[in-house]
Length: 318
Image (cartoon, rainbow, N blue to C red; front, side):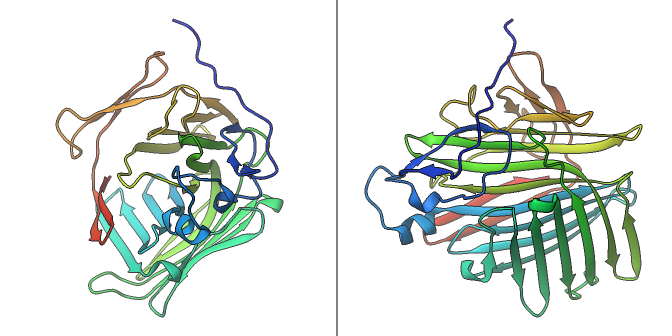
């Protein structure tokens, strides 16, 4: 069987040049994610206001150590935004889910990661993400008041981003002739402190990880993707992966699959997700190059369901 290869292109100055989206795999974050300048991404002339309302945007983090897993996400689907802080206590197998849904204009997603902010804030729920890739830093502040039976949350995290060339998965993937998605994914150590009710948990870089996903795209109305990511620290070495099967029109050339190991990024081929017994049971993730053979067993489930005018979601994510 032939060896898998995916070309890494030189970084463009802008994601969109003269109306055309630059598709490919890149070595570094792109400083100007100017999707609104794309010419006819939906096949017909459309004003920028329409293109803005069709652009899905989010910034999300998976943080973890041997005892806890955390998901932090600010997600703007337009029409509605969803903001989440999810804590999973692996020792006691307890899930704590905090979520605020709001009008889309209440949630801000950064245009780039160089010197910017993504945030959602109201009197009871605040997530602030400060991006400073110029200095290879990202910091997160969370302040959530007691909600029903859920205790209050306060958290501060600092991520030393591995932003050397080709350490992040940076892709622009086509869904059509001039329509697609952009993503920057990075694995890095994290330092921080979590206050959960009366409990205090410290995250130290020698035993804690962060996977960041900065994501924007002109997804189809019927948006579909399968995704699994994970990380750990083995004998002092940070190891992680990202595997996605989305609506790429050429996944052999354009995908966001990779393995981080030994301070290196190894690009991986397209994968398929097989769930013979549904999403609540074992997932089988496989490729055609014998590079990926993963079995995933969900422990808990995070479902997002809504149906608002032309926007519907039926998302199931462990």
